[in-house]
Length: 457
Image 1 (cartoon, rainbow, N blue to C red):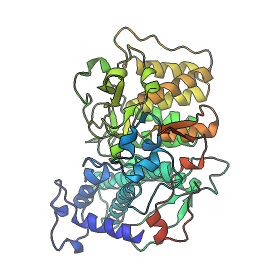
Image 2: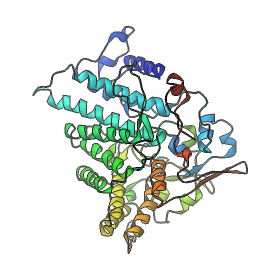
Image 3: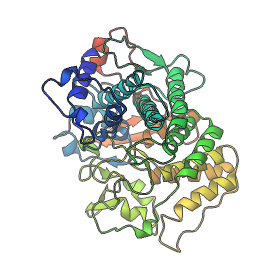
Image 4: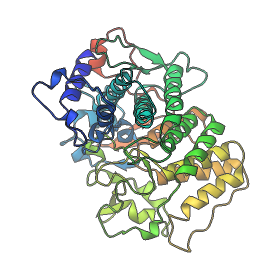
């Protein structure tokens, strides 16, 4: 792990950023340390590192690789894809083979930047003239750290279970930029508590709406808190924070206005975007290789415009997903549609069927051809919940959400499903609550930290 962090330090010292000459690469840059609020803000504004705008992404993709919203031709799977992608696709026990794992390294790189910014603030006294800028740096750094802790926990820690969270192993919570800091895994309970604590501290420090959606904001903090509380089954808190988020930012795209004739119909940083990130590039999930699952595609009604704007035809009978809010990259940030669905699910969970259906129907009215949508009805909250979960999968396809949803829903026994994939006449299965829903800690991390417990597979 120390080798990884040393690499991150070197990357940080030599990174370039158009927003500040501080980060311009120089041969003697190794002795330079950020020393002003402008420097620290520039560090966090390096959206190539912090948000994945460089085309390589930043949030983990291994969960999406393992989902069943798409399939890969067998020749492609064993032809040019990496062993990592092939192993993850069919849920092999042995996923890694000693290689560097971007899904681990890149989020921790963001955490390194965030910790560097937080430590830099210790040397900058706050006063009336710099209060707003100082607050924005601190709030942003706390948000980025929490956001990446959450992302890592969805891949490398088991799903939250209140009965075992105090003893289940979570992720290493790096709270310092010191490359010599001894790291160890926190519990799942401690991992989620740190995420909540960081977000709670960030909330009063940030503006309601960001200057750019690559920057954190109050809306983004509320959105993340809503996601976290949904993940730990605290539905009242999930509703509360989804409400607070949507009061600040609730714009939806009317899909009737989307051009369905272009290859990638959505603009990046569109009006639904609350916080923008993209997933780490994996060849296996990109258009032209990832073929949309037929059952998923057929679940969209003919007047459902998502059927047109989300998918494009590769050949007769085969389609690929091309409707990402990240355009060429897979969007993995937070948007208003997810918050509406999260609030709707929360309402259904606490028995408020009317409010749950209102949210669901409000969203879907923007997704169907004008005048064709027939609002959903339900006689019980459970019926409403099942409708919402079905639409959640269809709305948030290829956004890095499905893996987390499967993990949490399997724990509840409400929407459990056994996943399967057939390759070369061999069918592979992933039962609900299988240990393979948690990826192993990368080999190189264990090699540098031999006492660190490994995940069972």
